[in-house]
Amino acid sequence: MALVELRGVCKSFRKGDQTITPLDHIDLDIEAGEFVSLMGPSGTGKSTLLNLVSGIDHADAGTITVDGTVVSELSRSKRADWRAANLGYIFQTHNLIPVLTAYENVELPTLLLKLSAKQRRQRVELALAAVGLSDRAEHYPRQLSGGQEQRVGIARAIVAHPKVVVADEPTGSLDTETTEQVLELLQRLNKELDITLLMVTHDTDAAQIASRPLLLDRGKFLEPAR
Ligand SMILES: Nc1ncnc2c1ncn2[C@@H]1O[C@H](COP(=O)(O)OP(=O)(O)OP(=O)(O)O)[C@@H](O)[C@H]1O
Image (cartoon, rainbow, N blue to C red; front, top):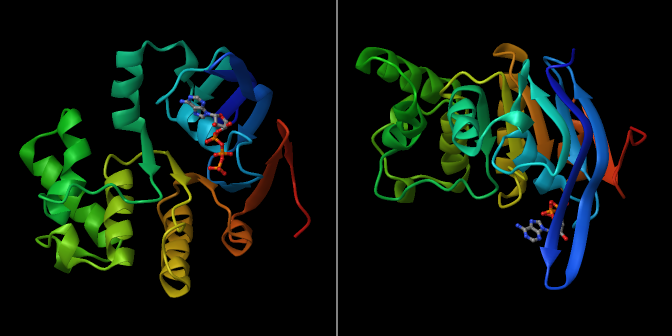
């Protein structure tokens, strides 16, 4: 069984008296260790897909299994517990809390886990080291560059040691040089920490660094020519 498995997944939204169905019977397998990028026209349901895989949102039909857990069958509160322990989410805008230091921002998700104070400290220090920001632990977001802020966001996503990390346009608000650094970091986390990645992007170059670039178009996954 693949690490992430979607079968017959459907998701619709109501907008006024209209129903929009971005995902209509979607199937997808992501094997452990893959780095999958996902491109596609605006509104095709890429973010919706990430929200379903991460258990933030609930599918109308179909099954979503991540590392043997059928996420689509969990209640809302069970999904939140499962997500805290098993899945990392990297946002386009890092969503750091401005009144917390880099250390405290990364520590936040670990407060939902059953860890001793020592284990928590070790996790946070490891995550900050993995993104090369040990020396910025006590800095507040406003004291960091855009790229450093995004790296803190990545440290926060990996602090719980998730097998799967999803990223929604993680370089969407970064300049070219910082984009390259963040993509290199994601590649390193994939290879060295064995984190399976699913990254939505609008950037063709970013998509190509993945081990498997995919295109989501009208509800179908296509493998674009490299
Ligand atoms: N909570 C919601 N309520 C109503 N409609 C929604 C909701 N979330 C998404 N949609 C609609 O579902 C469709 C898919 O949205 P989604 O954000 O997944 O697309 P996307 O492929 O990520 O787009 P983009 O590339 O522009 O970010 C869009 O038409 C969007 O307006």
